[in-house]
Structure formats: C-alpha cells, structure tokens
Amino acid sequence: MSSAALLDRDAVASTAAIVETPEPLTPHRYRLTVAEYHRLGENGIFDEDSRVELIEGDLIAMPPIGEQHASKTRLLNRLFSLQVGDTAIVDVQNPVALDVHSEPQPDMVLLKPRPDFYASAHPGPEDVLLLIEVSDSTLRYDRDIKVPLYAKAGIPEVWLLDVTGQRLEIYRRPSPEGYREIHYPAPTESIAPVLLPELILSVASLFVPVPSTQREA
Image (cartoon, rainbow, N blue to C red):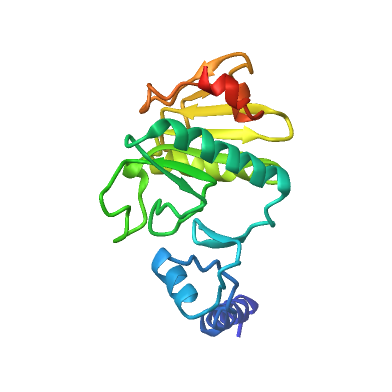
C-alpha cells in the first residue's frame, strides 16, 4: 500500500474519532426569569431582610443600607410626599417589573395613581413617572448597569443622586442604546420632572433639608 493511501486512511480515522467523541459540557449562564425569582422567595430562599434584586436574569446581592443613603431616601420621601398630593404615588424601595428577566428595587419611584395601589402586580415601565436612585457605595453599579437597563425598558426619566459627590444626574429620552439627554444641574438651579412639571424642587433641597420656616414661606 502506498504511503499516500496510509495517510488518507489515518486522516479518515482521525476525523471519525473527532466526530464520535462527545464534546465536554461547558459552563453556561442560567438566566432566572422574574417568575422563577418569585418562586424562590415563596419557597423561603430569601427572608424579609434579604437585599437582592434581579438584573438581567442575575441575582444581585446589594450592600446594607448605610446611614447617609437611608437619610437621603427619607428626605426625598418627605419632599415628594409633601408636594405630589394625588398626582402620583410615592413608592420607596419596592420592585419595578422591567421585563421577563429584570425586577430591580429602586430607591424611589413616582407612580401613576391607581385605585388598588398596584395590588394585582408590580408596576411596570409604563407606570413610572420618575425613578430615583440614591447612590453612595453603589454609584458605578447604578450608573453603568441600572441606568442603561432603565433606558432600555423605556423608563421616561431617572434621577441619580451621587451622595458622595453631592451631584444630581438627570437622564431623559430613553432608547435601547441609553438615555439621549443627560443633565447635571447646579445646586442653585430648580428642576421638575418632565411628566410632573408642577413639581418644582431646588437641587440643593435634595441634599440638605430645608428648614420648616422656609418651606412654609
């Protein structure tokens, strides 16, 4: 038998071995759905104190809420609750169902009023008038992960409060590629959400409590 024939036979045998050998299992990402996430909660995987949220199918463990973060959230809750009246529901650290794989828990959301206060289902992007994240230790995560996710879902406006930098970032005009408008108002400016134009606040008041005598004036 010629050397060429031997080479051909060896090549065929080698190819057959490759085809017949099963490929090893490789690790892959399993994306949880919101329904599966809820079932984990129903089965007692999380307790009431668990700080987790579902982001694009991944369970994200959030750090404990620090004093500054909690203080700013209380301040915002008071500011908005005093002004919105019946025009919006002020919702604090509750879920927003963005899509089948994401259900974050933003620090504050102003929701469209509904008689049942969303008893039948968590609010979705179409229910949100304004979403606010208070960021101290989670600033990069909020800005780089959650804000683009909110834009993709169509949340109309997001305010990001940088607690350490004492700066407000305003994101508007959502698109699949991100928000098309980003504003950094000065502390001396006054602002209002696009969908709640009557709700006018000074930027400074979001970081420093306004004395009661000034509020009454």
